[in-house]
Image 1 (cartoon, rainbow, N blue to C red):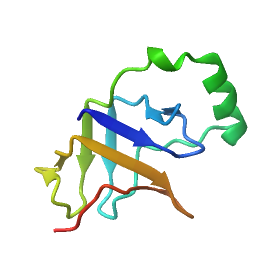
Image 2 (tube, one colour):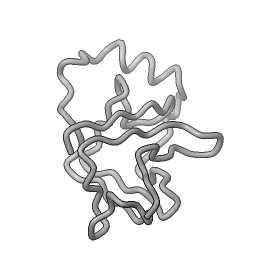
Image 3 (cartoon, helix red, strand yellow):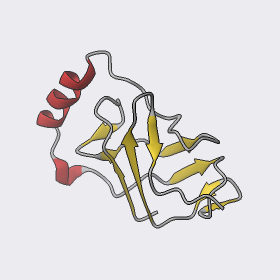
Length: 100
């Protein structure tokens, strides 16, 4: 995986739209199961980003596991070179998914 952009506004792993988790798991409905809400919500995420230098972040997670019926899903692993995760009303979903 070359790039992963996550625009979730309240996740412990998200800094500067970058996921800091080494492994991400997507459900059979293409929602991110790795998301962990911050105790202080969006405000805590903003403070964390102010204290972190964006250039110090690594490229992307090493592994994106996926149970969704998607053309990029090869043996329960995402094979896309880049993916986008965005907040919806109830969870964070993969917007790169293309159903088979």
